[in-house]
Amino acid sequence: MTFIKSIFRHSKSSFEELVEADQERLYKIAYAYVKNEQDALDIVQDAIVKGIKSFHKLNDSQYFRTWMTRILINTAIDFLRKKKEVVYLEPDWLDSGMNLENKSITKMDFTAVFDQLKPEQKSILLLRYYEGYTVPEIAKIMNKREGTVKSQLYRTLNQIKVKLGNGGDSYGEYSSRCK
Amino acid sequence: MGNIHRDVNKLMDGVSVPTSRLNHTVNYALEEGKRQKRRSFHNKHRFFASIASIFVLAIATLLFTTYEQKNASLSVEDSIFATSPYGNVGLKRMVEEGRVTDLSLVAEDNGVMVTLKEGYFDNNQLVFSYSMEMSEDFYEKTLDKDFIMSVEYFTDGVHLGGHSTSSGHPQGLIRNGILTVPYNVEKIQSNSEIGLDIEEINGVEGNWSFHFQLEKEEEFIHMTENLEFEDGMGNVFTVQSVKLSPSKLDINLWSKLVPRDDYDELSRFNLAVLVKKGNELFFEPVLRRSSNSNNAYDLMKLRGSLREEVEVARGYDAYDYQIIPYIATYNGEKIMDDSPGIGYVFESIVVPLEKGAVLDLETPIKVLDIFDQGNNTVVRYEMEEVVPVFPVILEHGLTLDMDNERGEYLPISFTVHNDYVEVKYPKLDEIRRGKLELHMYDAAFQTFPNLDIRLNLK
Image (spheres, each protein chain N blue to C red):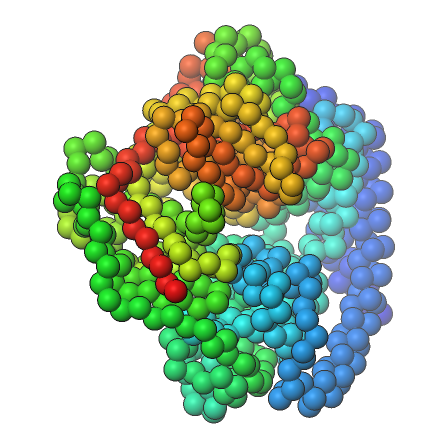
């Protein structure tokens, strides 16, 4: 029992330090999915509980950030699924912009457009542009093929570009950046 | 890049952090995690004790099951063949018709318990389904790895060969999967003693060994005469041989396509395999196409002919097949990357599922009507040229390039009328109806109108 306690003490200490140093970032990512303080805190809490239970499997703490981000994102997506509040896009999104037969688009700001993305699209954008991961790294974090990540990133940026109207012109540079 | 990077960072920087509540939450989570971890440790010991008990039971079970197949019929709901994404409609039909054997053989080693659940054997394929149980620890260690399972096969004590299955991308263990013997199984006799040894599961060596007998389905139609079809324009399709078993149709096809100037690197040579019942044509899925040419489906490089084996699942008990070759030239782009290399992104066209919606392809497709008919939902399309490629119905938010386990409705069959084409889909879920869309990759299609490739195998 003493031996077990010492393992816990060691894990707890390292994990605690790493989490405390990273907690604000984790909260912000969680908030980006749910736009609600309490829900974001719940997600952070669940992710930390999951993290501490499997922290001993993380061989090198330099990968903590990537590892914890993955846990957090999966927790956030699970949370949304369970709450069945996944409104990927509001009906007016379709009516105003995405219908190819109606290309008259009301210009929106980036925050509003981001909020209307579905969770996986948010994940890809956050990982690529907030966290700065490469496409292969994102593929690994999200457990997807690189081609799928590229394709989804491409579509997401195109959606944003369409929705932002003129403001999105620069997003057209996506393909060269994504190579 | 600057703008999106700036916008995302601005968005995230703008999130205000409730520091006090966050500190409290983090502290609570650390305590709770610690508590659950302790509990999990004790449960793990109980789990291994249970595994040991099951193993003892399994030995007893094996003694009785090794040479005695269970005749109890499998239900579709319980069948891995019928429900796994790695299964297909041919195997599903075999389950429905009671032609799959319930093996339920168990072997345990190194903390992994493998159950060989189902077996199916005909002259085109010998397949098994398995399930695995293991400690959560073992499972979680595999999550970042490709799934690899090494298997050796024996018949009547003679080594048939071995192979490693791989998922090809990190997804952890496939706990409910299907093993296909990758050798010609024509010569294996019905009720031979079959040995199946799993030697490695994701880097963990062990000995999961099974021995049993399987009755082989007798039906087998093997046609070897050449059937040549040409369209008078130089395009030639020759069916060189056909092997039909209850679950699968294998076709050896030789194709010679006349190069055209409008082919580009996004042009693809596709095949639709159809079964005709009255005027209705039902899709049979092409499981795999294998060729010995590196440039098999790159029409820019394919300057001669293509010889390939086409494997088709038999979802229907039918013997008249129609094969429709077509070229799809997609709108999209080629993406170069260091890893995994060249990729392609095809553009999709998406419209709401409603009357009057138009999919604006080179040859537009218009929705004339949508209605339910028995267990199906029927969509009537107006289209100038009938190509056996129809929109897929997807729940809003899903895309064609995702693995859509739910919320996806694929075309089942179609009937050509004078002014429209009627396409049957699985009946749409009432709850989802308001948020369904029609999706299609944006492409120009070229068919071979003077070709009528038909196989009558009875």
